[in-house]
Image (cartoon, rainbow, N blue to C red; front, top):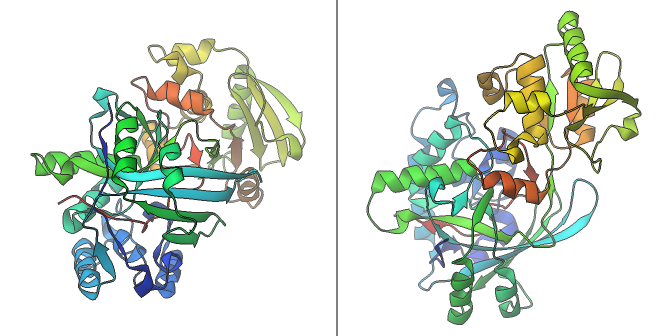
Length: 427
């Protein structure tokens, strides 16, 4: 069962930095060099300065700058503490988070969560489960940063089978500790909850929970590696998480669409792909407005936008025999997953990609909206766009309960949890 504990957080003195809006940042893995510069222009104390010490690609050693950016981050944190910009709590607390947002489909929601420390468990225990495969590069980067700073700087976003929000909501003051609106228009409000009775109730309720990592797999695997490296008992056995109940009415999940290149320059390859799709799928011409398959029933349903002729098609898997054959031995929940069907039958099958091609994004990219996917294909940046449906939360949980992990970018949980609300010491 989950071991969830409050934390003695290291956090900003908002009176000294001009409010949470000046110092909070998106997670490190969605920030490019231009956005990093813009965040630092907002405030030299912005969390991006330490969470993304320099804008380089950790998977590309040639892009690494001179010097040690991780040690630079650690020295900067020490300086901020000396200036009183960062302060350490003397008492335990959990931190409540509400997020008012407009989703990519235009609907509005409020998602709730609680930030706390969670004991790092191996996946085999079943207490904390992943749902997507990860890449080694970001893990190396995050581990070096943790070693240097001895802090969890960015929370892992996880879904919990037990919901802590009803316990903390009555304890919240009318005014939050901090508030920030992110670039997507999401209004994030954060409260510090130190009431011992409320904290104890949260710990007790979550003790019976199973946790599913929604966003932050690399950070969790980093926490496992750091725990093993340090050894023994201590704060290194815990990692910072933002926990949202699976039943939270504001929880939504969206698809990530696949973009393929390498077909415009090779018409025969394109024709072979289209012929193979016609064998495996029922193919129907649709309008651009009908390209999005969201809400369509059935197994293996996709939209296809083709740059060669600007056509839109609906693909529906004829039967499950071929995918069952190729994924023999895999759990049924995995075999019925749209992203697994697309990866197995189309990307690795008809398009001839290897698992390494997919991992390294060779000839493959992702888009978070149908409009963005179509635009990049129409502009000739990519040749084909495969439009996916959202994965139901129940299916995410069903796959997580098996030994399989979803293909990369199977889900898109919106909004992100920002960095800079609290930092959690791990040494």
